[in-house]
Image 1 (cartoon, protein in one colour):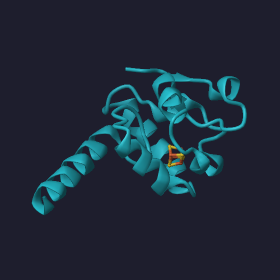
Image 2 (image 1 turned 90 degrees about the horizontal axis):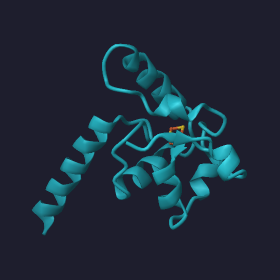
Image 3 (image 1 turned 90 degrees about the vertical axis):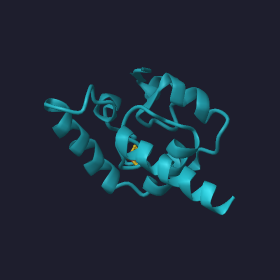
Amino acid sequence: MDRPVNTRRVWEDTPVALSSAHLLSLTIASDEWRRTAACRDTDPDLFFPVGTTGPAIEQIENAKAVCRQCEAQTDCLEFAIATNQDSGIWGGTSEEERRQLRKAQAARQRRTA
Ligand code: SF4
């Protein structure tokens, strides 16, 4: 799993909680939404809990609380789904929640094909 990096050092004008893989993918995608990201000044580790039990439960909820205040939540989630971000909290969703969303999206596409 990619670990978050301090994006303030790497990408001064758009500091968002991102892993190195995220940075790579974002260089080829539109990133305007990140300018209003509520996590710009948040520790990236908050968005990448280790596991889903114990202390990770509170960490996930704290990350989601930041996302709920975020103007970019919809764009962030769309980006995460479109680029198959399978680690961390994106757009207010956990890894498992995004897996479910992708499954539902794939099922809808099969039905309409
Ligand atoms: S929705 Fe959450 S992870 Fe995405 S940019 Fe906003 S605060 Fe950051």
